[in-house]
Length: 340
Image (tube, rainbow, N blue to C red):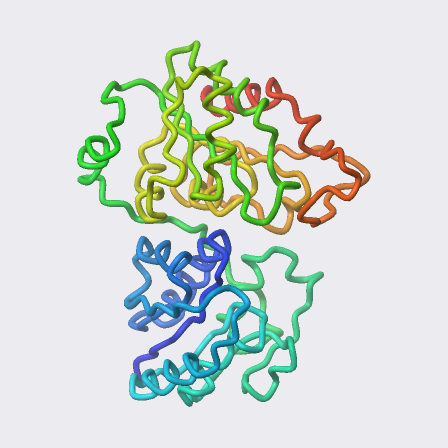
């Protein structure tokens, strides 16, 4: 029997890449000796490096929204000789299906969207009611037919090399004490409507600083302003890691935290995949579509008439879905996780 060699065109969003690991796990169940390679932009591809199901990482360094047809053609031509038996295309854009098409991969699987029927020869119609969650939509593509029952969802589980922890503590000059570490992830790449207010994060940090906990602030360079504001409100008693780490280092550092509070973001999904006690804060997004998949995650979402709106910015200019989520609500959820 021919060994399956599968190329997965991975998502550009970090959180979606984390959820894609559930697909990889099911593929390994169905095809025990299959090889799974992932092609994606470098910022999301780095997360796949922590997934034991993935054999090879293939970087497609194209800016978000850029066509770069020549680059995609050249990549497809290079991959033509790799002997892939199937490609699974997770993004819904037509350009994301170009590389497998140019690589002449015999079976090209994905959902119909953006006029790409000719690029996919195993095109599936997405039933959004049956497959409500993003992770369900990914995993369903492992089936040979679109009408098969959904395989059991295997939660993402990132594998970390703990031997690097001491090196990371020294590299980032982190406190070596054995106190609890609360990681706060206040950024949201999608937009401000998904961000819990800085003052609320600072009040939460102050509460646990007074208990002797360490507070580590995580985020990309784009999140430095919000992390700096939170740290200022706590008289600079937090450890601000924003903009100082590569994403791979942020994953490893999050693995050292004892608890996490995060907006709905890529880092939230990473924390869940590290099985950290996590309080996930949802405002404009829908927790029933993109929930954290870890066993120790608590979702906090207010049932307001205007939410979820899926807007990048609050159309009413009040962000009540986040503003009215008071710090004490998060403290109660976090304390319940500590007690469990």
